[in-house]
Amino acid sequence: MSRCDNWFDYWGQGTMVTVTSATPAAPSLFPLDSSCGADLSQDPVALGCLAKDFLPDSITFSWNDNKNASITDGIKKFPSVLNTAGTYTATTQLSVTASEAQEVFYCSAEHPNGIRTVRVHPHRPCTTEPSMTIRPPARDQFLEPNKTSTIICSVKNLCNQAVTLKWLKEGVEVSSGIHTDGPVSSGRNGYTLSSELTVSEKDWDNDRVYSCKVESKNFSDIRNISKCFECGGECSPSDIGTQLIPPNFADIYIRKSAILTCRVINMQSTEGLNVIWMREDGKELKTSIGERKVQSNGRFSVDATTSVCADEWERGDEYTCEVIHPELIFPLKKTLTKQPVTNSHAPSVYIFPPPAEQLALREAATVTCLVKSFNPPDLFIKWLSNGEELNASKYISTQPIQESSQPLLYFAYSTLQISEQEWNAGNTYTCLVGHEKLPLQVTQRTVDKSTVYLDGFMDAEEEDFYNLWTTASTFIILFLLSLFYSTTVTLIKVK
Image (tube, rainbow, N blue to C red; front, side, top):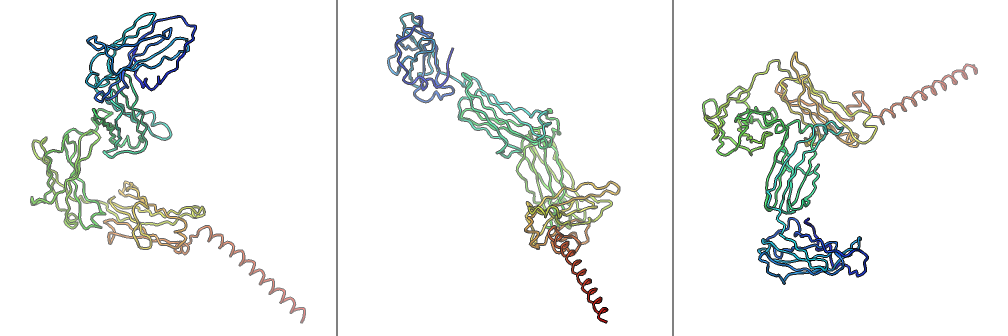
C-alpha cells in the first residue's frame, strides 16, 4: 500500500492516549509519497512512513539511505493517534534535497512486538507521457427538447495542477456552455483533467470545428473535432482547390465597386501560397490575401480578394484567379464573370405596421417589410428611422427563399423591433430595398402611426376612442331628434 495525499497536515500534533484493552501487536508499515504531482525540483522534498495498528504505544522510527547508512538530519516524528479498534497509528517524515530525492530510502519502525522496514521512493507522476483525447457528441442527446449534446475533452497523466484548458469554435475562444472537472489526483499517474462543451445540433450538422486546447508546464496540445472528423474526414475533397465567389449587389450599389473573392481550400500548410487576380489581357490586379482559417477536415483555407469597377463587372468582363502553392505541380487557374440571369424580375415591396394586438400589450412593436417575386436572388434590405439609417443589429432579414419554380422567383422579409412608445411618438420607419432590376436599383416604403390611421389602420387606444365617439354621436342625434319632435308637437297644440 502506498498513500498519496497531504498526510503531514492531517496528523498534526496528534493525541496522546495511554489506556487500551486491545491485543498487543507489531505495526504494519507503509511508505508515504510526497504530495501527488509535486514539483520534485523544489527543496525540500518530503518523504513519509506510516505505522498502523500497533500496541502498545511504544515505537521508534529510523531512516537509512540506499547504502544503508543511518540518517539523523531532517527527521520528524508525529505523536501517535489512537484508532477506534484500540490500536495506534503513527507517522514519521524525512526532508531531503531535490537531488537526494532521486534515491531510494528505507524507513524502519522498532516495536516491542517486532521490527518492520519499508522501501520509500519519491512520487514520480511524469514517468508516463500525458495523453489527450476528444470525443464527439452523443447523437441521442440531440433528441432531447433542447437539441444539444456535449463534446468531451480529457487529459491523463498530467505532472501538476498548473494547467489551463480552453475551448474554441472555428478558432475563436468559447466562454459559455463549458463544465470542467479537475485537475484531480490519479495517484502515481499524476493528474486527470476533463471538460465538457455543450453544442447545438444545428452547429454540429453545419460542420463547425471545435478545438480543445490544453497547456501546462510540461505539456501542450490541441485536438479538433467536427462532424466531418467523426465520419472519417471524407466530407470534403483532400486536394487543394479553389472556389470563386462573385460580388454581392450591396457592395456594387453602395461602394460602386465589385469585390471578387478567390478561396483556396484544403491546404495542409499556407507556406509558399501565392494568389494573383488578372484581367482578360493578363494584367495583374492588386490582390489582398486574408488570414488562414481552419476547415472541418483540419486543413486550411484562405480568401484572396481584389476590387474592380462596378461597370466593368456589369458589362461581363472576365477575371482570372491563379493559385501557386508548393503542393501543386502546376498553378490552378479559374475564371470568373457575371452570369446572365433568365426570367429576371424586379421585386415588389410591402411594409406592414405593428399589429394592434401587439401594441395593446404596450411592450414592443414590430414593423415588417416583405420583398417578393424577384430574380436574381441577390439584394439588400436596410431600415431608416426619420430618414436616418439604423444599425443592422436592430433588425433581422432572411436570406432569399424560393417562392416559385415556374418562373423562378424569390422572396425575403425583414422585421424591425421598436418600442411601443417609439411607434406612438409618430416616428417614421422606412424599408429600403436594393435590387439590380429595380428602375433606379433601389426603392423604399415608409410607414408611421398617422399614415396607418389614414390607410384604415388604428391601434387599440384609437379604436376605443372611435367606438366611444360613435356611441356619443348616436345619442346626440337621437336627443336632437326628440327635441325637434317635442317642439313640433307643442306648436301644433298651441295653434
